[in-house]
Length: 343
Ligand code: SF4
Image (tube, rainbow, N blue to C red; front, side, top):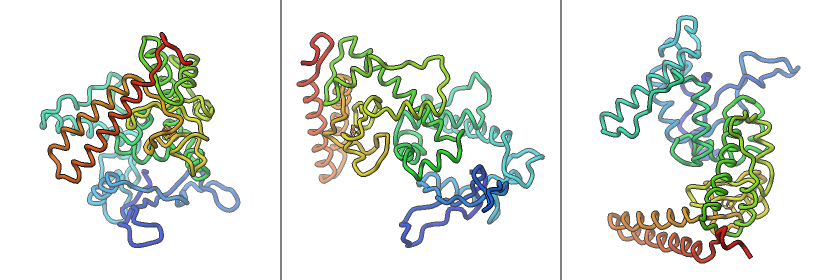
C-alpha cells in the first residue's frame, strides 16, 4: 500500500475488465528477476486490487495532497520523520497518522453527540500499524460484509483464500492481513461453537438441518484462551470440512460448513462459506432461540420502515417480513432442547 502512487487507481473506462476501479501497485516480497534474484525495487502485482467506493474516495483525497505521480504516502507531504524524506511514511509516521485519525473521529463523534462512537483511550499506548491490522482482521472475521468498509472487500476475499489466485495473495505475505484474518476467523469459529454449547446447556432451543452435527461439534470444540494461534494451524483448523461452525449475523443463523451441502458456493472450490451470499434452505443452517427473536425483531423493523417508503419498496419490505416471521415460526416448531433431545 505504501508503494501506491497518484494515478494508481484511474476511473474505469469501458473495457473487458468491466467498470471496476482497479489499483495497480508494486509487490516486494516475491519480486524476483528471471534468474530468481530478489528485486528490491519491486515489480507490479500480477493481480490488481479491486477497490470499493470508500477506498477510491480515500485515494482521491490523497491525490489532492501529493503531486501527480508521487507516492500517496510520501513523507514530504505527510508528517513523516526526517529520515524518511522522499520516501513513503515509516512506522512513526503511520502511528502519528493513526493517532490523528482517532482524534479527528472523536471530535466528529462529540460534534454530532454520538458519544457511544467515541474511540476509547488505549491502555497499551498509541496504536501501531501491526495492532491496527489485527483490529481490522478481528472485525472482518466477525462482521463479514459488515461495519468496517474493508470487510466488504476482505470478507469476500476470505471466502476464496484457498483458491489458486487468492492462495497467491496469501503466500505473498505470510505475515500479512490474510493470515491475521485466518487466525481471527479460526478464533471466532471456536467462540461461536463454545457459545452454542453454552446456550444449549442452559436450555436454549436449536433447530435446522445441521443442528445435531453442530451440537456435537460444539460439545467437543477446542478452546484457545491463553494460547497463541499460528496461521498454519488456523488454516488446518478451518479446513476440517463439516466441523467448523461460523456465525452468520446477516442471515441470522449459524453455518456448520460442509462443502458438498453448501448452496452459497456450488460453483467454487472454497473451503469456507460465502457468508455474504447465504442461501435460504441450505443444509448447513442452524438456528437458536436467539436467532428466532432476532428474525422477529428484524421483521418488526421492516414493518416500521415500510411506513416511510413508497409502495413498491414498502411491498418488498412487507414480503420480506413474512419470510422472516416464517423462518422464526419454523424454528419454534422444530427446535430441540437438552431436555428433549433429538430423535
Ligand atoms: S448457504 Fe449454507 S453454507 Fe453458505 S453461508 Fe449459508 S448456511 Fe452456510
